[in-house]
Length: 283
Image (cartoon, rainbow, N blue to C red; front, side, top):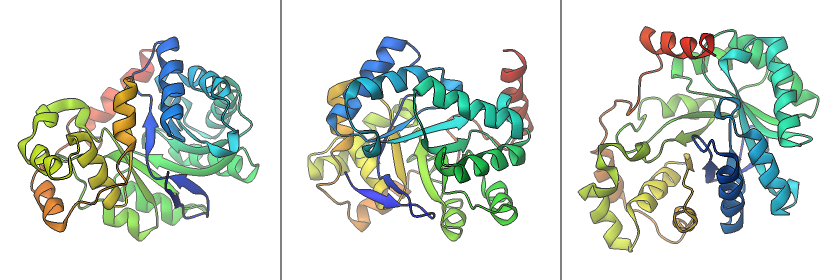
């Protein structure tokens, strides 16, 4: 597994395994154990996923030394603000039976995320977190936070896939040395992505799957992909992306697929904010 170095000197694996929507306890435990078994060392969860305890139990059962792992969680909107955020981080540590987290992100740029970020910064100074960052922050919010906080975010986790490539956003992350992570690299199967003829044709050149082509494309853009599957064979495929390299023409062909539109929803619209806040109020 190759590592990258974040802007605070912490090393992070260049590919990761996500557990979004793996809500069944046993299924999540088994998936994380399988992912660790095939070589993943970055596990990405979140408070809102409801599976932090399962992730922690899987880590304990795996027998892999804690220092060899990179564990990420995210502070949800309902925990925004300094006091709530700090309390929630301690709760996440308790649920996962961990002494520290490698990375904690603000899940959405909604609510008192300035207070949340200050709490995360203090937790980093206290040794409870190795690195802090954000998720779903568009360039304007990312630059605002970077310019007005003592600690520049180490990571910004955003939607990146062949249909939503974030060509305009990535350079702003790079300018502030913020590492981009990609959630939904396969667009959760939308647009019949696994049968896309451009991606299949490229894959046939290297005897690779469409998924492997996408993950390699992200890797060559210096973006850390977070893939999810409960199928162990797919896990093996998704981590096996370091033995081939896409050509410049391959990269250009993939770029031609960009629609510049989210496969899910635009976080910057008033309707998206209303929807996300309603999720909190309806809990």
